[in-house]
Amino acid sequence: MEITVSQLSGRLPVTVIALRGALDGSNYEELIATGRTAHAAGAKAILLDVAELTFMSSAGLVALHNLYAILKDETEPDPEAGWATLKTVGNAGQGGAQPFVKLLNPQPAVMRTLEITGMNAFFEVHTDRETALQSF
Amino acid sequence: MGKRSRQWQANLASLAEMREFVEECVRTLGANESQTSDILLAVNEAVTNSILHGYGGSGPVRIEVQRENGQLSVSIIDLAPPFDPTRHTTPDINRPLDDCGLGGMGIHMMRELMDDMLYHTPAEGGNELTLIKHLSANL
Image 1 (cartoon, chains in turn purple, blue):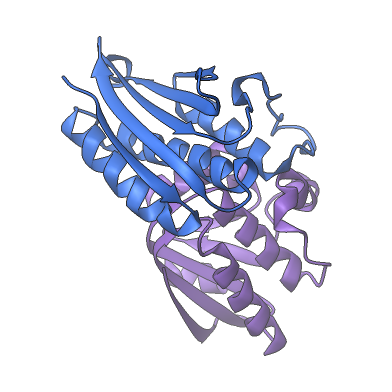
Image 2 (cartoon, one colour; image 1 turned 60 degrees about the vertical axis):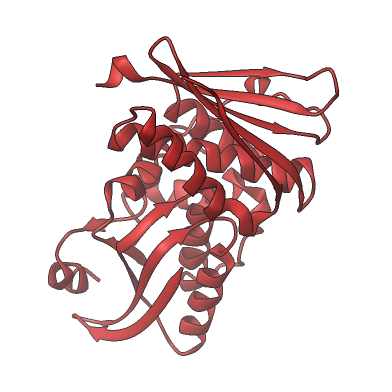
């Protein structure tokens, strides 16, 4: 999986992380590490451009959740805790999607992973880059 | 049509190659785009569980793919300690999420993605998990 990071501005500065390839158990920690680095550099909002991401497993969901926890300044969950790691997202999501991490242009296969786990309720999905940037 | 199978000394770095093998098989056997996508995700979760929770990182995994009576079946066979995912409780994603581990999330996804899931312990030990997709029902 290739990861490209860029800084763009909407109403707020947004860190755009573009993913290309497949996100699975072999590389999800790279995405978490990228989020950690971005946060250390001051990132407050992450837009994940997944237009060229062809596959995302449950490990990818764990990475998404970790990005959320990093930006929310929560203690990062242990990825091995699985559903438990997503629990705080679930709780936050009771009032709608959380505002820290959003997705741009997921392919059907990636959308399917989000939908069958209910995670589409917690990660806002956009199909237009400008609208996505302005939404933060 | 005959059964196709391949074996790996699998670890997490093998996942992409295993998905490629399964994709090539199921497309050849008549799965459409969404069926192929569902099967790949389910197999990925099953193999990930075998590697991480069965072996603790690495071990032999064989994948067998065949089409019979309008259904595609993919069997994941390992030599890890017996674990029957079909008896695992499904988390309710509509309630505050259940604490059932990353493996539990994978099992939930397999159930959602496939039409059936069969498990048995082979005589030589280990696990054989068969994931089934009815092709006709989704065409």
